[in-house]
Length: 142
Image 1 (cartoon, rainbow, N blue to C red):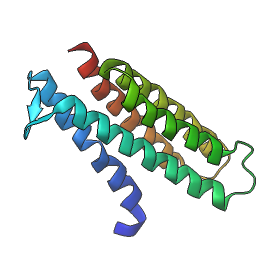
Image 2: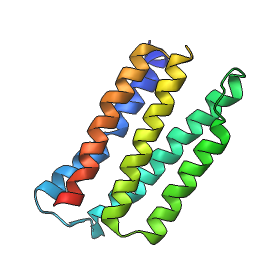
Image 3: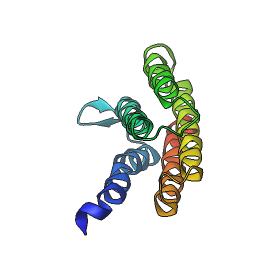
Image 4: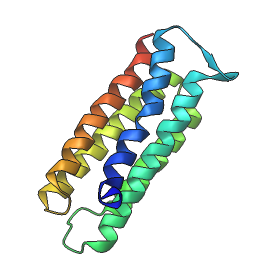
């Protein structure tokens, strides 16, 4: 039972740092254990994007009928996020992350429409992506 729901549990747990640090930003905290909260959010969002892109690689490896090359697309998105953290100011970087997360959700929609993932998985991705996008907007507007 746990193994069957592990993906759903991990996706949900992965949103907790976004919620926690967005909440700290709402409370006007700038630092957490002497680290800039925006820096922590930036590194974490880069990590999550890399992880989602890696899962798309796995899906592409096991499904020959996908017409979209997820190897190329996921590499492009991960590298864009990486260069974004190097060269963009924080607010623009968060906006880039939001754009990439939305693109990844659209890819998940495509994968769902190809009957590769379940409706429950896609709906959870929509919910969590929406929550994460809101959490990444908070440091931009505060």
